[in-house]
Image (tube, rainbow over all chains, first blue to last red; front, side, top):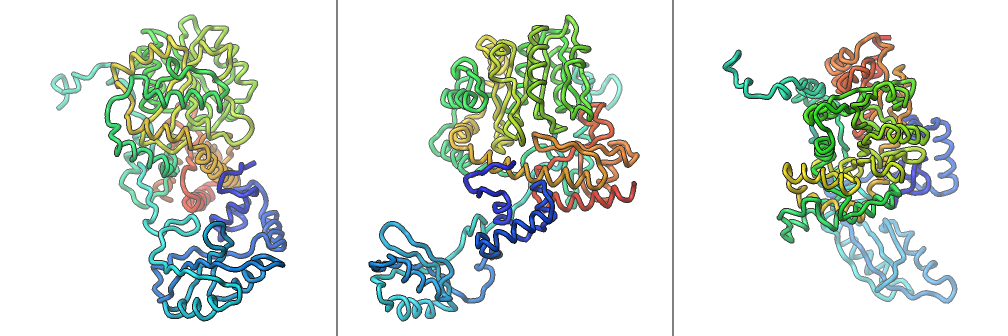
Length: 168
Length: 392
């Protein structure tokens, strides 16, 4: 049985899919010492239970110049008597501009990763849609300039195997 | 220049007669070919974890550029002693019973030279790492190989050791988990070999550099067996556990008088292991548990994949429980190990090492290293499948 490491999840299948979700069921089955049918069944079960919520490519957007802009936004919000942060957080997370969003400890409450077609569009989104929401107390917007690493993947430098070709 | 005027006349007969490593021969053929997928590499494909490299850089910034104590930095030796206690349940005094060396290779060489007197016989098992027999010879000893075989999953058996032992036998060398077969020992093997070593009062030199890469069941080690302690020279290193081959860092654990003797050889030959590498080693032992776990998991999955793939294409292969090698039989193809390896390279541009590079009883087998990325392994298996299919 494979062990659980600090980055790993309790099921090695999940770890493997997080590393490469495009791997075939046949290869995954061999790696985990089981059958492709078993792998398909387990993945379907994870999807059904909402544990696996999607599959995405890790794209170096800096190399795909579509003019889009990303920003990180810190939001301070007023919790409500019933439900705390959740109701307003859910309202904000539904905006298509918001790619990721987290409730944070510390100097602000919500951290948003936002994408827009232009600087102006992101600025408008913050001032017109976010800042005006009832319960939003303050915003701070930081535009992203360059991605160095995203979800465990380094964006620069392609891996090179410069080992000697045959060694004892 | 040939004949009596050749500079070769200056080379000692002992060294002149040492065979060149079988790996070297193969390396010369592969070298320079860019299209080759190599399953012939005996080192991790991972780069040393960043926090360890960063500690090495920091040590240079702080000016750690001097000799260290001959035995190695006290802080590193203490850390190794603690690691031996935690991971092997073995008690060694970091101040007198741990020697830091330039890789396990140097540890092995120094240990043999400290232990072997001219004419002493040294038993080792084949197939094995390429340096064992030559280093025994260089130390003045007589190498005595015993075979290990597929039907035993390449474990050493005491009856074969018993058949090889003579009154001149001084030491036994073991390497489990094994390069090139991936074999490990079972608890009962360890017990039986321990009994054998004690009965003949031999020195057991146990090279356990692949110890952290044990995939199933308990790790079988000769360290931490109280009755064996005086007879054991335990060798380990950082290369495989933490992917630190280029740092050249290993160590010996042995009773104080033996450590002291090995240290004499080390002192006159080497002085001290490289300081920057020792700094990296301190960080590895202190904060490197997760690195081992992550790499072990990755190797584990690749092993499952490659063993399943090889068996599927008709190359019989047992499930090795350690190291990062599989040792499939290629006998079903009717080719010898060398023929198979050379033709596979020629026709499919996949490099594996013929089993015979590791001893004559490696005939009929091939060493495939899975210290290679999954995409490369997958492509190599596809090509090998085509190659085997055309011959069976």
